[in-house]
Length: 434
Image: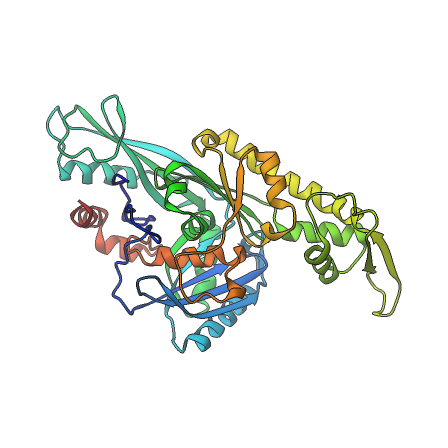
């Protein structure tokens, strides 16, 4: 694969055409520790790993999420307690103590757009200094005061009317341009995440939107190059990421997830939430079957004693509650992709991941609604993952570790940005990768 430009802010370095795992060049010393915290609506998960040929998982801690709704923190104290419990579990298992971690953003009204920056080069040969200048201009793109830039990723250069140039150095033209994929989130939501981590006595090493992390964990190189859509189906949100040419080119989310299905079951069957979740896991399906009418399910009723009144309903009734919500979710995803124009760029490949995608029939329904080839994505490129944590529900946490391998990981702390300077970091990146 030809070199693609990866920024010092918010994106890993260029990928090489090598056997898996091809996506990251470990820039941290071998044997050093990295940590990731996935803050979701239903669970908080912490991974601690040691840098080797592949990151080796040493400790895993996961805890029921409290104080989080729709991927956003709504109760700082409760969320902080869940984070501390998950981190403590991972530290106990690893026998190590962490002071900083890479954190995900699954809510916060994630949005993305392509921004073009351009400079005049006066018909001369394009130099490294020109590359630094145009990249700096792209990184300094202004956003609304209530939005914060999470990632700023160069996805292609142009010279005059020639587009899609991967490395313009040495070429001649009048104008040098760069297309930047800028991913933003609500500034208040970002601050709340940072505050919750700070209350857990940790520093935020980087913030990463969930579909980006899930893609790093689940995708193979050809998928990233040729075009693929990652759909991360979490508890409170469903995140969307489109990859093409080795880069993330679109990110979005819809405010529906697995907990909405559980709530629908609880309301439709007048059953406690815990029983609704159990029925969804044991009997739930997104597609109907001819046998559903014959299979009966015992449904405990809200407010009744354990030995109290129990209703019996056919499985078809449960499916009739689940299927419309999954259909709605996938149709919203399709609409967002079509509205963004990235649907065609992504090709016909979809990777489903996240805990909610494990529901029976979701893969088949997604293939029908999106009219694409669909597979279930599980975390790879890591060693030491136990069977229980090797499923789609842990893709984001695994991807955060892979992102942490790169010193290009973006820091939300202004002090670091001011100290290093954008030009210095771009210059360092150019020296290392060209």
